[in-house]
Image 1 (cartoon, protein in one colour):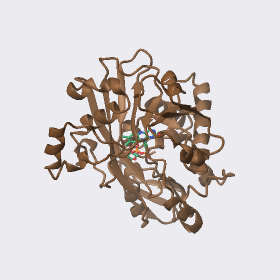
Image 2 (image 1 turned 135 degrees about the vertical axis):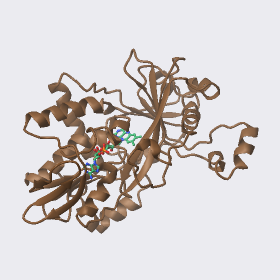
Image 3 (image 1 turned 90 degrees about the vertical axis):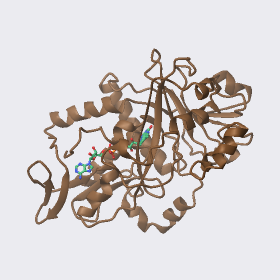
Amino acid sequence: MIDPRQPMSYTSAQSGDNYRNWWPHPVMTAFTDASIDELDRFARDTDNVFNMTRGGYVLATRRDDITAFERAMQPGIDVGIYAGAAVHEHFPALARDIRHAIHIRRGGDISGQQLGAWMLEQIRANGGRLVRGEVTAISRNDRFVLDVSGANDVKADAIVNAAGPFAHRVAAMLGEALPVKNVFEQKVAFEDRLGAIPRDMPFSIDLDEKHLGWTREEQAMLAADPDLEWLTRPMPGGTHCRPEGGAHGQWVKLGWAYNDKASEPQEDLVNEPASDPQFPEIVMRGAAAFLPALTPYIETPPTRYSHYGGYYTMTEENWPLVGPMQADGAFMVAALSGFGSMAACAAGKLCAGWLCGTPLPDFAGPLSAGRYRNAELMEQLRSATSKGLL
Ligand SMILES: Cc1cc2nc3c(=O)[nH]c(=O)nc-3n(C[C@H](O)[C@H](O)[C@H](O)COP(=O)(O)OP(=O)(O)OC[C@H]3O[C@@H](n4cnc5c(N)ncnc54)[C@H](O)[C@@H]3O)c2cc1C
């Protein structure tokens, strides 16, 4: 492994660490199911050193009619659907206007940092080595030769481009372009001193578009400012919330991946211009619309909180790129968007399969760059109403 940073300290340190097998397409369901199978196995093997939970995901909506959602549901996904009063019996923190709650049971969270630390131990125990430095150029004669800043050149028979938001730069060193973009998404973690969020609440997501609930005066003031006018328009669904730190913790995480503008990744994430100082208030307003006990925090924001973010490195169709690059012997694990923590185990195993030439699962072809040669699949993905983006 070659990395100028401490492993898991860039995008992976920003992850919400949530996982689920709910996707609008069976390929992504099979892929994440395979990854969750591995996580389950590792949790058993390690006495759950990475605190894997299985509270599921709750998708909440004010819609009366969820038949379109049910029709799009992949067979085999274990869900519970609650309507009317049953929603509030099972999920009492949700706002009274929520009419349906869809509980995706194969979901929960992990500690990605603990999992990564354990994996690093396995790598070292199996003879792997960590070289601290940045790959700045790649050439090829009979083997790859990697220029590494601050370290000796590294020679390799095979390489894997797993450079996260910088994967396109590493690909460019091989003369290749990747169809990926980087979109900065933010989170807030705060100390819930009011105890607004039940500690056993599953990861909960508001599926509906919403207005942010400004007063008439606030609305008029924002509408008059061209930079802030967008805050008066309907915002997309996807506001999410979960307790962080287990039953006895007091912290809560909020997120909302509403940014859709691509940016060039910054070396230091705190310098990202798309990091929005208003995000903590925006996400709190969005979350209070479906978890009303958070409402007091709009007027009196939490005093202890952390606002952070990272890049969703994604293809247009929001599927990853795992498998061979064009150069013989070069592979990639890239474009893991907002699902790289949950998909990491399957993605790593899949890439190892490509590299070692062992039998591959059915999802291998569609998740590799080879899918761009399948016009029918690409048309299906481009016209899909949901890309499973949360
Ligand atoms: C706000 C946010 C919330 C998220 N929430 C979730 C979630 O709940 N669940 C989930 O499953 N996923 C989530 N994700 C997605 C997940 O975090 C990412 O998909 C995952 O961390 C990507 O991992 P990675 O190893 O590809 O990239 P990174 O963690 O960025 O690692 C890439 C590494 O490559 C190194 N590198 C780059 N260029 C070079 C070079 N030239 N030479 C050597 N090394 C190089 C970097 O230093 C870095 O350490 C979230 C992401 C964000 C931003």
